[in-house]
Image (cartoon, rainbow over all chains, first blue to last red; front, side, top):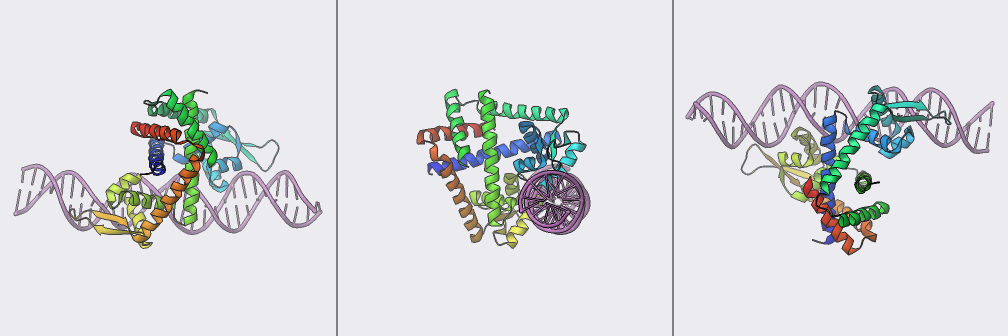
Length: 138
Length: 138
DNA sequence: AAATAATACTTTGACAGTCAAACTAAAGGT
DNA sequence: ACCTTTAGTTTGACTGTCAAAGTATTATTT
């Protein structure tokens, strides 16, 4: 098998394992994958307009409106007016939402720790550098 | 930022970019993500029982039955009896299904080629080795 | 050998998530 | 002042999903 084929297969396997790990972790919390993803993005970027958030999530604002309604009902996020643009709504995590974000992020860090158990510091440095280069090529 | 945090963020970014790449590539074909995933798994593993396929896809057999119905209608896969177990159905790609799988796989290989444009052979070797180690830790 | 249990798949009913398109409200351009 | 564009919401239709009930076949127990 060629190097590229080998890398393709290994990355695909890694991707699939990440997917099912995330799914199983999220299932335990009782929130859906879409809800968790919304919380993650808000936790990472802070307050966002509906449109910005929808773009980062890769969904339409119509879909997001419904999702935000649910999360507001769960008291995990809050809607507020945009200070300058009367058309816009700004959305951000509540303290409860922040807490969920921190907990979820912690699980990610623990996973990374576990996964790199047999990866040396030197290797990890190259791994990181490769991934950064690859991210730039998309 | 700690190494682990850095790696976590970079991997998350990579994962997200892979997701949206896959989604956009699949959209162009007119087939859904779930359909394409089913074809990918069948293309990679060859003929499978319904149950085996459902497990590899991470869905229930109930969901898979419906999905297979559609793909059979599209003439991309075929159902057949299991030679030894009368309860089982075996599912495999048709020639048209194989063709789609080969085309999709080719796109993956081209992506990998593009992504590693600035990754040296030595780095790629370490990248591969790291990912293989990490895959074993799940 | 007959009865029971386990397994493989299908069907059905109920929901999330999703989009496109129509709608409302506000801002920007002429 | 009047279009036009933009931001967000609402609505209708569809896909993907599961759980639970149903059917057919195989395996196990008695």
